[in-house]
Amino acid sequence: MEQLAKSLIAERFIAHSNEYDEHALAQQQINQQLVQLLAQTDKASFKRVLEIGCGTGDFTQKLLAIYPIEQLVVNDLSAVFRKPLLQKIAKNRPLVSFEFMEGDAEHLVFEGKFDLLSSASAIQWFEHPQAFVRQASDLLQTGGVLLFNSFSSENLTEIRQLTGVGLTYPNQQDWQAWLGNDFTKLHIHQQQIRLAFPSPLAVLQHLRQTGVTATSRNIWTRKMLSEFNQQYLARFSCEQGVYLTYTPIFILGVRK
Image 1 (cartoon, helix red, strand yellow):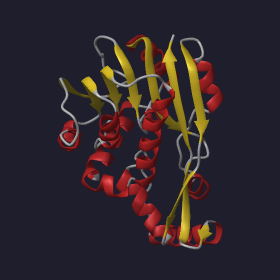
Image 2 (cartoon, one colour):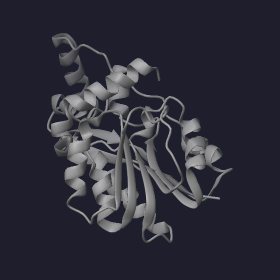
Image 3 (cartoon, one colour):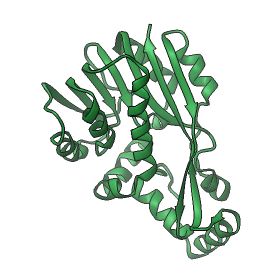
Image 4 (cartoon, helix red, strand yellow):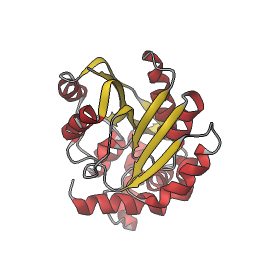
């Protein structure tokens, strides 16, 4: 992904940061399941944690509600997320140390070793996901935990089928191969999260308000909207209106 696209991603998420938490229903389910996945390890607390792509801090808050953390380093493309993140952190137990690092995590230098490296619904934006695995291996101490999610190629399949817009994602086999050398106790599974909306227009509003299609530069005309509406209703209707499908891949590994 070129640098310009990363700037566009930041711009789209910043524009809707105030309403993100209200509409990010699938992402919140993913965050909860990521925290629950940590129970498969023997960890009861963490000394030093790095979170990449913290956004407004929903995952951070859920993590802190269960696991004591001494030092927390968080990263996002923009410092605009620092304030809402701190507000969520304040609702949990106090931290010994907190640091916010602004910028593209693919090009930042993180100092020291961590015993947890986490990321919720952010790695799919990386240009070089395999390099992220190598970076995580370097940053984690022996026995440290890597916890994150990406998405499968079936993610938002309704939008991809109707518009041709969608990211290219590594599959479960890719992640297995990349992680196998340096990580053990690997847990990789895919899940489906299906949301219902009253109309196709509500689907588009949801995507805009959550930044999910942040790299799309499509300009919608009335004709395009009308055709999209008709085709969506014809192909993806349900009792509540229409549906939209997320397909997250959950990944946990322990550094050898």
